[in-house]
Length: 302
Image (cartoon, rainbow, N blue to C red; front, side, top):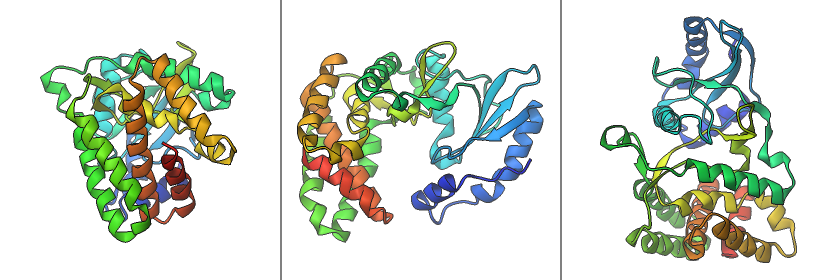
């Protein structure tokens, strides 16, 4: 089988690292080697798939369905492996093998085409929040913990890119200033230190057999829970923007999610602002102006 990377993956990697390594060129051979080493039977490449990895639906030699995932180093697959091992299948997809090759993960098969996003909005938020709560555990001890970035480290890199974005588009300067001020205030007194999913949203929660819903695709980070929850606040942002009452709905969502997961409402609002502005500025930088306008309008409501 020829392992052709989906167009979505090619486009996303081009946006995030246009002058990066030759991982995409080597990917077909790496996928063939990973399949042969494990004696897997390939069913199909998942399309459209993710934005940072190739996902292949396979069967193990005993017929058990599984997922083979290949990701470049810049997507931090070893950090994902460490987080999945630490969660041990509680709230997240199960890791099926220990380390065998860098950037290659063999995972439990979920239902890849059935995510929480398929549910009505209120039910989807409830199920997603319940899944997220199970992931918020104490991070590993000193050894493996070094695999994970902290919220301060990750948002520090993002803040530098946001400042550069202001130089390119002065119109976003007030929102960037507000987001950076919120970050500084939030980092001054973090309330807890937990292992977080890092990129949690409704589409990252898939239907499973062991449990009704399990999280996939973490980009784990260590920090406070409000940072993780902030990405969920803006789920279905295009629907929020289309509503005449979108701003009021957003504020209610912040309050309800904060209350349901025992997170401080103002800290959740602050991280939601930072993450929405950061995503909006990044979308501007790579030419996705429509996405940027949605995100920045949303951020303005906060």
